[in-house]
Amino acid sequence: MSSILFIMTAADHWDLADGSSHPTGFWAEEAVVPLEAFLAAGHEVVVATPGGVVPPVDEASLATSDDSDTPGRPDGEHLRKAIVSSEQLTHPIPLDQVDLDRFAAVFVPGGHGPMQDLAVDPLSGNLLTRALDAGLLVSVVCHGPAALLAATREDGTNAFAGYRLAAFTNAEEDLGGLATKARWLLHDRLRAAGLRVDTGTPYKPHTASDRTLLSGQNPASSSAVADLVLERLAPGRRNGPGQP
Image 1 (tube, rainbow, N blue to C red):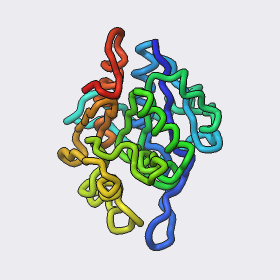
Image 2: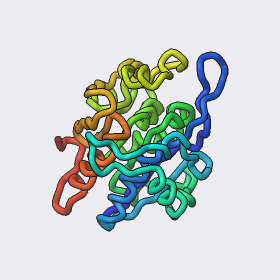
Image 3: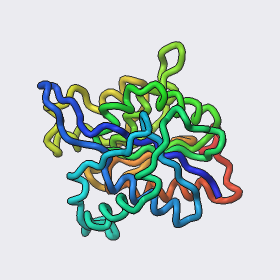
């Protein structure tokens, strides 16, 4: 079995354009669903955050209920219990203590938290760049791709430039009511960094795979992204940089 590194936000707020702060953190479904899937498959999961801070959950994400169009999505009660009882989520390690050599994959859940800290965190960005160069799987979901913005090389270019991915779209941010309040939009910033954003229907499951980058557009995509990771970690599957 493999070891999977979760890089998660330590931010409990997101600074908006008007100077106010929006309460946030990680989006529960995007962390809990993949975490449970990976552990059930026998993989080890280690959570790392800036400073080793316990990742704060976005309370709004605990109100999530089953979506009739996407059967099997967890409700808020399940998510809350899973977070409180998770050894991984309640006992993270600092990013600067990560030994990347022991991992086969890196996973970054979303929520608006990564927009506040991981998007500009040099330690997180360096880990993601090294993971990409080493041929590790890198998987991101929803606002998790914000962490890729910090993955820059010495010449200032983004390590993931040219890669196709799914991420939370401008349309979804607008439907969620925060597009006009944001300092910047994830969809726009990813494209400016040279990544190719593959968009699906707002708030419906949508994933993208490009070489070792696996991604999902929104919370409803969490389970599908986890399945992509598990498929690629299956025994005998090669995951080098040249693999589709």
